Every structure is written in structure tokens, then in C-alpha cells.
Image (cartoon, rainbow, N blue to C red; front, side):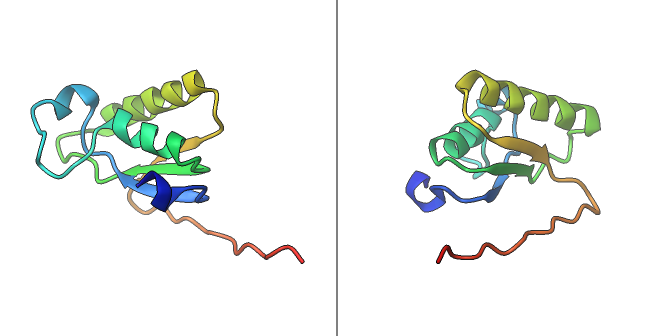
Length: 100
């Protein structure tokens, strides 16, 4: 996955569980917060969008997950922007042009 994502500008990744919740959901096919952040950091992703939130999580829990993710990024010293997906949000991606 690191090779596949290497250097991408924007990654949208399943982050259904907090690290504490993940221990009870191993093998369910969803990711934990720290594993997603670690993957994005290892792959030098520019911007990470956390999505596929657990239906039992309210806005407060999602906000805390974003804060935790940003703290992990800050600790790494690498540049990675982290946001959470939210209903109705639109993301505009600009096209890159190749250097001549």
C-alpha cells in the first residue's frame, strides 16, 4: 500500500475505528486511526481525508479522531494535512501540469 500511495496528493481512507475500538474489530475489514495515519505518513501523502465513519460516532468523536490524527502527524514532523469527510462536503481537485 505504501508503494501504491507513494507521493499522492490526496488520499481518502477508511478510518472507521479509534485505536481502542479496533482491538474488538480486528478482521472486520476496517481500519484504525493510527494505522491509516501511519500509512499516509510512510507514503508521503499530501492530504488525508478520514472517511467511512462508524455509525455510532457523533461529531464530537470524529473531531477527536481528527485531533488525534493531527497530533500523530505533528509528532512525526512530516507535512500531512488531515480532515474528516462530512456530509455535503465537496472537494475540488486541480489538475497538475507536467514540467517542460
